[in-house]
Length: 53
Image 1 (cartoon, rainbow, N blue to C red):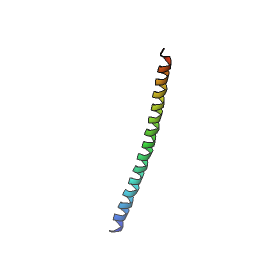
Image 2: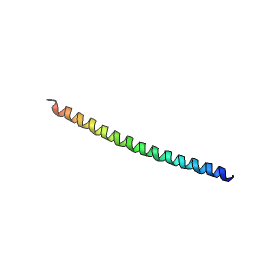
Image 3: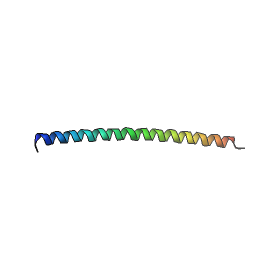
Image 4: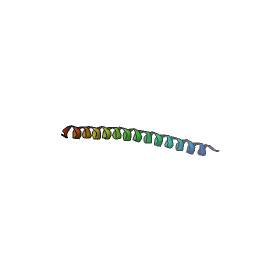
């Protein structure tokens, strides 16, 4: 391999690492959103049960 190939490989490796970090951040956001939705649904269900005679 020549220097240009190593540069291209390094550039691709950096881009892949950045994309992996972005995906990880998105998964964290999705997990937090799911937790909040679950909490809201649970609170809503509990309030419905407490209102029933």
